[in-house]
Amino acid sequence: MKLLVWFEPHPTMEAAIVREKRIKKWNRAWKLALIEADNPDWRDLAEDLGFEPLKPNGGD
Image 1: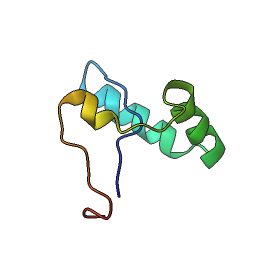
Image 2: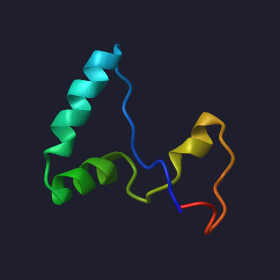
Image 3: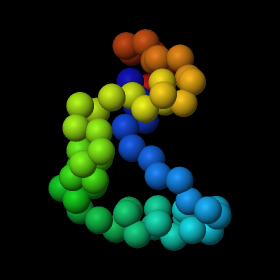
């Protein structure tokens, strides 16, 4: 199952790409800390954006 557990908005596509490239270089512990700072329960944030919740084993 895939969940949207973290995201951040950016004013431009270029800014988003720069940020994504920086985060990709981080170690796993830093990435987990980034998620858990805002979403400690690992909720599916896609539901907050109006998407239907994913079903278990629903299309990895």
